[in-house]
Length: 420
Image 1 (cartoon, rainbow, N blue to C red):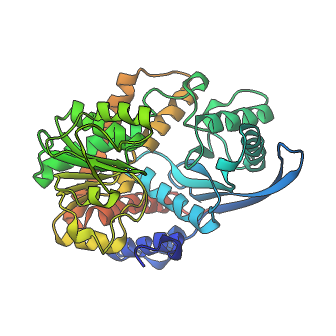
Image 2: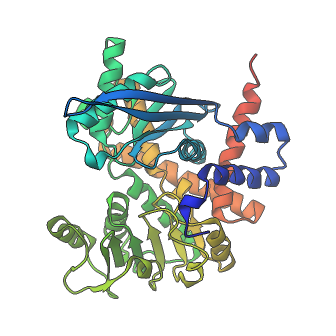
Image 3: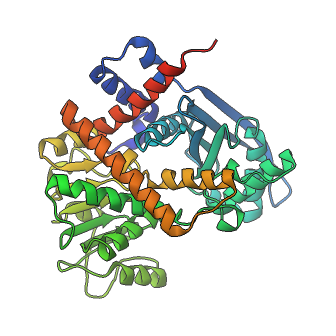
């Protein structure tokens, strides 16, 4: 089952996680039930004019999971395999991610069933604007703030912001985050996920007895998050990057390589494979490399019951979403491997999205140094909160992160009470 993600209903997984934490916190049935259902779900079916003059009807979703702690936050993905249950699960996980880093947001997620790889820029713009107008009644800076996700980007956000603003009659930059800087985007947003991950690795290494300076690091997935984390661990913390990979394969060099040079090689050739002086290895071998620190920054379900006991790293930091299946978590915990779960390790992105929104609301923008200082403060505190919960409840960090998050959401629900 572990290697068949399609057979696992992600929303059932999300609900199971709530049950695990509810047992630990001795939560009553009423509170548990509230946490297992989304607050609001919108399904829209809308026509889009294609370049050849025909019309196609697309289906899109926006799920707002919980708003007890503030307006909803979450990305919009364009993918042929988008399902309502997937969007529900992602909205739940966004709720917990925002609560782990203690930013005043609930969680949401959106998706449109489409294949952007087979659509022109004009078709994507018309699809985006129509989808935005269909969901415009439930989004807004005080209600629900979308962001980019799979196969959407800053241009997609610019179209949504413009569509929403045209309906309002004035510019509303705070309706989305992940925008171009010229439209109210934030400095530092592009590298926020990798930077946040590097900060959390630094903090956790102290408790795990793992050295970062002079220590070895393997990174599966040399995309945005993976390459930024590699560069920062190398430049600022003196780590040795010994293995990296992308979708085409991986490279290994025992005495390490300069990640900036690997990045240049990838820009020229389209892959890290073939980097001079490095040995070619597979993506699976990157995970099992002899290294002090492993950063899975690629796809979900990479560390499974089959390979968890072969992981040699003492510290695993999940820059990707869901790279470790639940059975593997148990094996790694028994091996005394420290896992920094995705809801903590890659929460730098949503944290700087929050900063972007705050800057838009004020109409006052911060320099990069201030963004990074504030991000560091949030990530350091969030790791400390999770580590404390892990020790208190004698559980692994993933369960501890959910304990911290769900307790914060439950507290907000309880203090607010039920209206009317």
